[in-house]
Length: 237
Image (cartoon, rainbow, N blue to C red; front, side, top):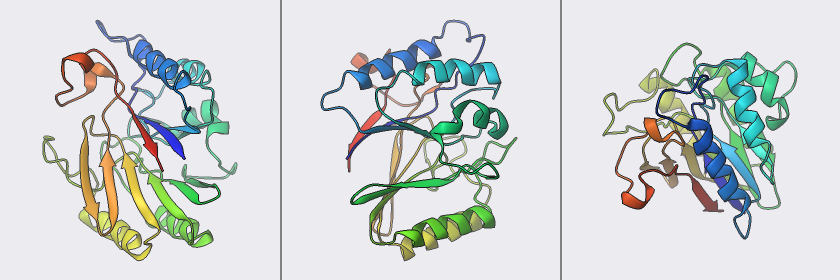
């Protein structure tokens, strides 16, 4: 399965001076739509908007609805659940009473699990007992299929960042790591948030974080040819 992964668009209205975050997102959408063979779906791992305003979500949705394939989204620390649900309801497989934006979708041999690490009003990520229990339930529902997890905050240290640890506590990450190690069907965990590329290993599971679509907010060296172009990833799973 071919999956396009985008993250950290940080749509802000009005747009910050000398930036074009909507233009960055439009360029990526156009590239994905013209890709051959085309990805079967696109995942956005959060920080869709910068301020969580409805009009920012509407502007982001207007562009992302132009994708030729299904889109799945989860919140980042800059997002707000109420406003995000209002605009992106059909892009998340949630019940009306869902407190957290967590869900799973299954294919013939692959299962994708989407986690909500948002701790509203805070920069760092969190996975409370309720969310960890939901994760375990989702994994138990179809434990035979190869599984990939998407989440906003990486659970490993981003050593180049000013604050390398990206979660509220090491205890939370320890509980998450135990679940991952106990479920060897999980082969990959993809995240955003750090605005830079990074990788790690958790047992047999590969952990990766990707950079930001918002060029003005990303960190790291992208080479001359990519310096003015937004970056995203495409996986063959």
